[in-house]
Length: 334
Image (tube, rainbow, N blue to C red; front, top):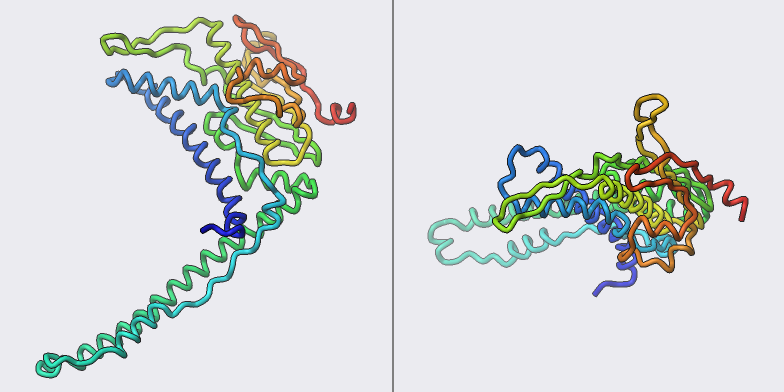
């Protein structure tokens, strides 16, 4: 039966395991689809369609796989791992075996008594060495657990005291945004005691396939170009989904009230004739605004209506540059 103490100790580990599972799923979907794109000829039409659909689903549902609220007080109250005690278990068994040895009549007849006694004595030495190695391994594991415990305790105390440096440490420790990175997006975070300012370097349009895959009634693979309006809507949903994911992770991990995110993508600038980084979406989200939203059922683009945001988007033209919202200005206006 799991003790309360054991449940508390496993809490942070459970958070990390959940994140790793989410990251693996997204990474695997992206890997399979990208590998498929390199194939000159696709032999399995059904698998190709499934890979395509899973990849597209991963791009449009980034906002769904989010960590539950992290209870930093629970982590701060966690007890330190117990230092291991040396066990003579194997030595004890070997000595009991040696003590219990009684030469049989055949041992005496064939003169194997001393040979068996020597073998039992050797087994005691080997058992002692086995106990020592087991203890050394436990000590090594204990040191790793203790180092991890002390680091997490320091982070928890800092987070509870609204320390911006501890906020950064928390994100580095748990890595909640690694899944987004696996899909090609980078995140820069600037932490303050009451808010987080995020620059989200999002995937450009090449992340979205410009075609659909389906399987014909005869089992053949059908590939068709999609309309520009549909393509732009898919890209818009992916960007909005990524933004919402970052918002939710920030509120799940940190005791802050405000998250401001500026999504940046490389767009074509007609005035200079080349592509450059431009802000295509800026969102201001307060913690209490998330309470009424069922994120499993939303359309990511429509969901932004719940928040103050700047977005200029056309179905045929896609995103255009917009002014950035500023967290400091918004905090002062409260």
